[in-house]
Length: 115
Length: 112
Image 1 (tube, each protein chain N blue to C red):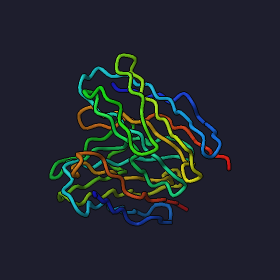
Image 2: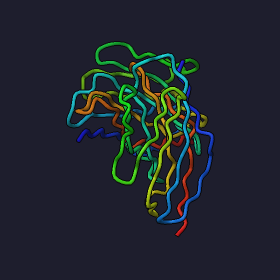
Image 3: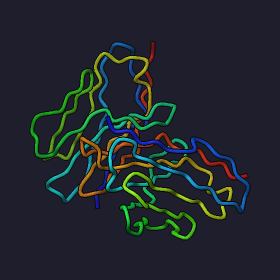
Image 4: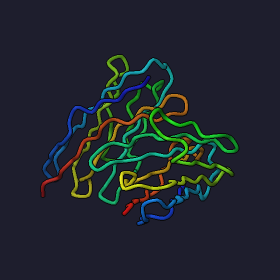
């Protein structure tokens, strides 16, 4: 089956620093990857969509300079939270499309805490 | 734009009983997919069941089945013989093109 690996699973960083989250499709080539943010007891909010080799498409209200997305290969996308602040603390989930069922496969998520 | 609505923030079911989670959606697309995802406390999103809009037959996966009413834009999930491990958040989702739109979720509690 399709597997997406997301690392780290949790991270604590100081305010003002940057944090990189990786999302890898392990056994398929992901034509498109998605990054979501989830607040406690809420649904997933799409932040951006990235296609390999091209710039990410950000949803309205998402700061592209703060949330840098790179999709350099068909198996790897990264989300970098730059100059993190406490309000960036959240649960971030990636998803990749392109598996055998042409469905969506999700990573296990990253809990980011900015102190 | 696609919208997905789950009108039940919380549901409760007795172990071994059956429960139905509701979902309605709005779309201008004629070809699309619908999904139910389960998110347990680990927060890993797990695909429960998928339905192609062009298929009239309702999808079934073991104890999970859907009632897909295309004209009414309704896509409910029925869980039979509920188990303690079914307790989780359940999200209904709609896909047209590349984008996946989620509903607000329903928290399912299973009573022993």
